[in-house]
Image (cartoon, rainbow, N blue to C red; front, side, top):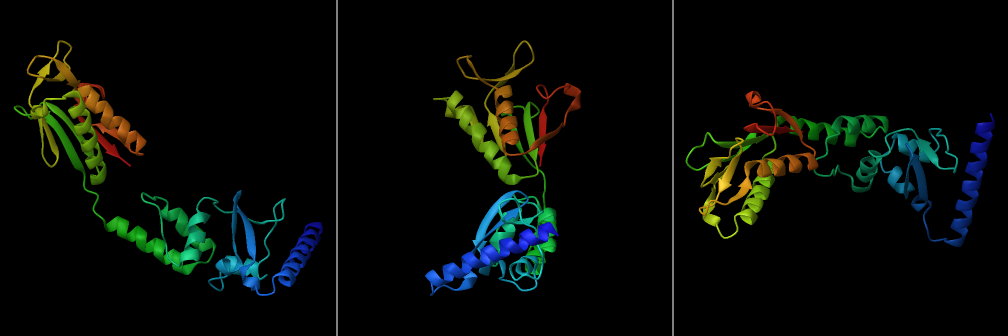
Length: 259
């Protein structure tokens, strides 16, 4: 009972401030009044007209008094939902379409939020996006770093994201050129293969790229390290070594990344 009384007092206080504002700014429509929502601990400030854009939704019901909503300690409407995902809900209300950042992977969670807020249009767009992603082929692509004379010697990098393979390829080419400065003929590049002119084995079994003057300049392990670090920074994980007979990632002939 005490909570209800406090709620009514806050509503009267809010209406009083709103009426005072109307008296000061006579030309303004009440629909443009700013509202602050606390969604799962995240504060969002928006306009009434944004929240009431679609009728018969949860947010429209709150604004128009059809749905009772608790207040937080600061007098803001409190909605116990995912505060981070509400950003996309609010943007849908603002733009009238679903616009998500590249690499967004929380379609199922966003679909639940759309259902809770009773936004049928958002729910349909999320469903359509998820279905398109399911139909999009996720074929595993690869990059091969190998000896020009013996393709059995080298490293293969597998991943189900072609754009990431391209990034790894660009990075490894950059690293190789910096190590082989003045010797661009030491390696050649094709679509998915980087072939070095010389591979030899050192005493401990590590293959190295070799210049014509017998100087070791770029180890295969360096290129492998570059690939692993890039993958981890981009949110991929190392699924497994495709050649378990080597016993460790350091000595493996292949790396397999997946998200």
